Length: 79
Image (cartoon, rainbow, N blue to C red; front, side, top):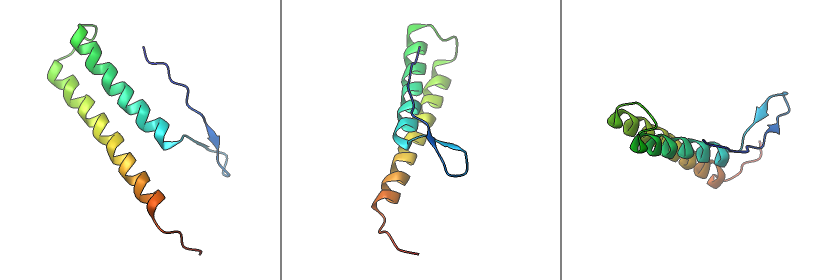
């Protein structure tokens, strides 16, 4: 069972934001938990399907990390 505490940040428009590093950590935790559950027999699913889905979550987390690094590394321009 995954237990994660994720801080919510109020946005100016009334919405809520979640820090990207928490989102990527959650995606990676889900992927790892699925694999572990599949390997231990707790999850009744095809192992290859679980591995593929876990890989997709991990790739999504990697892509978010790359996008965030690119955004944080971009030179700031005053508009």
